[in-house]
Length: 358
Image (cartoon, rainbow, N blue to C red; front, side, top):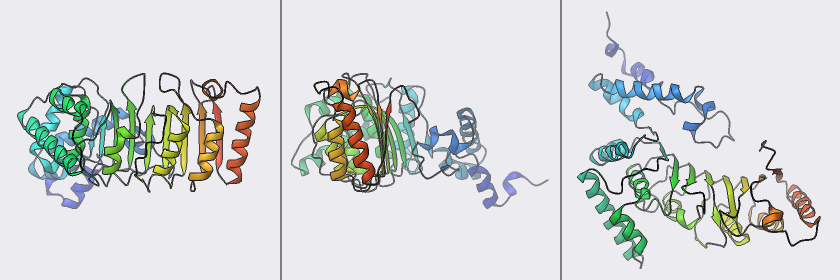
């Protein structure tokens, strides 16, 4: 009787690939989810995905042949692990086997309970090497590490786990992560050119993510096409002097954005095609652009925009910005916004909070 390993390598490769999470194409061109969280991509529930992940791990232990075939697919997706100990163990593996990090295509990092210091000396040495390299880049640019960064790298913080992981996975294509401040500190310019999709959550119920906090990532990943942030908080123009020419989809959930910051966003992504926005409340920030600001910024900067979808969330425009206007002015501004954008050929949808169709 023929043994499984006696089959042609091409056939064995096809068998192994069938257990890989990324084997299915997106269901349609406008799908901007992270593939691992979209059941439409995989045609199965997450429990089936976990079973396939376990199957790949078992195949790696079957024989040297299956180890060679299955390992890269096993590392294509790094799921959100259950404990900080598992994260440090994974980091030790990636530090000691740099070839494995080359296979990673998707990272899912939302666990919050990180240890403040690495468990393994290999990881500690790698961390110190990355800090020295970062210091050298700052000095070369005429700057230095901030006191906050020096404290973070000496005492530990959750964000440097994200920084370490992304520095070891240069070919990653999608990232979902919970952030606490500046992240991606160890990624130099253009070092994450394969990254296409990102989805970020803020760690707290107050404040939010701003463009400055994403500076390192935006410099490292110029090919980002889709970005989801919850929540986003920024009042003024950040003047990042960066451009993401390939970013066509932006979704800001439960956010507070000032008029000047709105200009920054449009300048950052000049080829933006779809912009989804949900208003936040006073816990997120202190300034929200008005409909007139949105109309002006969109017509001045969003040359490629084809769809604008706004959802009035916990903080409504008239409560946060236009409460001083006379009754009816707010509604008139929305009508004017809709007409102006439609005249430019932009589909405009403004949805109240109670309508969940957006």
